[in-house]
Image (cartoon, rainbow, N blue to C red; front, side):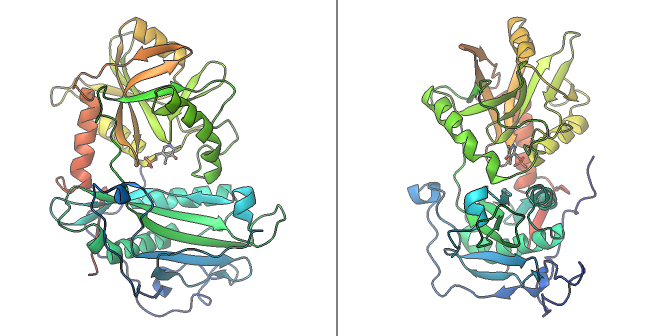
Length: 413
Ligand SMILES: *Cc1c(COP(=O)(O)O)cnc(C)c1O
């Protein structure tokens, strides 16, 4: 269940005060990551913010004026983090990350509310997940709350200009990442690492602005598996994504949008692209049920959108509401044979993918072994339930609903 979360108003954590980042460690004398020791150098050449509908904005190449970096070494621990102009890194060709994918990352968004405030959505969960990912790939640990303070700081500095009050209802994408940059070719646990946080201009990814609405999924084949028991599917490691790109390109070529990742000869559904997958169907005993893959075998990513959908379903749909019949929630293995059977018996109600990047993306079709399974979309470009989740979450993200899941960023300019 949920850990205690931040309440809905905050003052920004202090990043002022001078401390020696080398001297305040707790871990055997090594310095901890410490946001209060941040060193700041503002850019001498601020850039122009592109229009949201410009090709530049949509290219996913444009970052805000600044980034935050922090370097770590085995012998000294974390150095003081730096806020500095966005720009290239210098790393040696022998760097571990370039050869062995010693990397993990996070993805979250900064939202400009209709009330003019900047918000993050449950960002503490991203920071805790980044720590789990770092641990899985032998990268250094850090206090998640220090990472959160650094994320908030960068948002507070660049948010006012890059996500102006004149753009309510829009967002930027925040990418924290941690890489091993040891300049040594040996296959070994990293002794040097670099944490960085950047903020990227990012388009709204919408699968409905075309003749046939909805996301179309292409079920993976047996010879192309995304994650497996004992693997690292639950961690946001770069190593999980590169190897999926060929399957993704093939799906696109066949007219689908994303891969529906199956596992095992029984075709257990795990995830959709880099999003969690939800299905709503009528059970054989006549209940409306929301099903999604379970977390327990560490195959799927513990998505924050996934958790939020489950929690909303449990709290707001346990009883009938807003013209929606009640839903029961089940986190369990879902096999393709069950989906095929439910389609045949007309029990499929709707399906959607859920994640920060695609948000709630209604699914209209699943291509599975030479056949297409059509999924209903009762609300024209969505299903009624997906629409309700989308509306509830949008209201929280953009401040129409006051909710402890949102984290208000106090702007600095
Ligand atoms: C990031 C990601 C998700 C979605 O997680 P959110 O926290 O909801 O953004 C789901 N699956 C995979 C594989 C991911 O990488």
